[in-house]
Length: 246
Image 1 (spheres, rainbow, N blue to C red):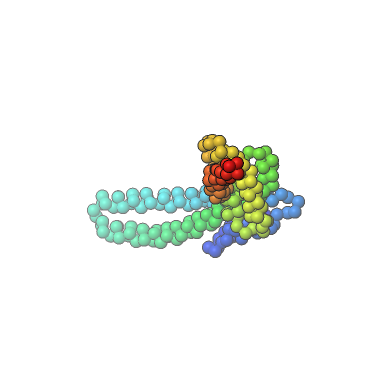
Image 2 (image 1 turned 90 degrees about the vertical axis):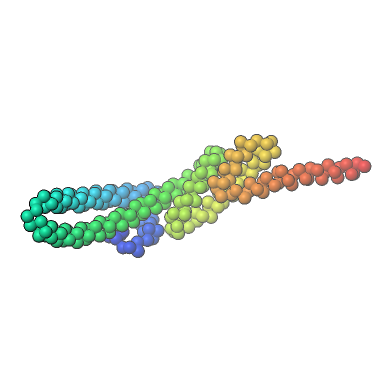
């Protein structure tokens, strides 16, 4: 995919639509994450070229200021014809100001284009990262580290939020939700065991896992089940047993 400044010149530039187009142009024989990484690199190089151009133009504008200041300084030491010389300088400064205003306007436009490019680059990074996570998440779950699972799912959620409605990730929200439910199922028995054994450290770590994945409500349910419902059931069964024995 070729990357052009013209793609980012319109004020109505839509970064998600641009990334969507980038995804749809991925060749069938190439992986999406590799393709998006290559497009991201092209954007990065183009953004660096723009940054260099902005720096050169800014330095050129700044170099004109000392010359004007020095000229006024010389005039201040020359009393003869002071007023006429100052008036002439002021006229030239007015002309220079008009030219500078145009230059500043151009620089602002270029900087806006650069900002849109950087936004597209960042979104591409998220899309490439999301594609990679979607491909490797089952391996993460197979490894069995609950905290790594939670961090991976949180990264996928962030990626989905940035990428938006890109067709290549249409099924991703449902898949992430299913994986979060799966993780909650894994966490639940460990959390119950931690609460029953009064292991505050383990319970705190498992709470953080649920918080990262947006399933903190499960903590309240497990806590109520372990610390309220289960003890009451034990008391009731003990009471029923005593009553039956009597």
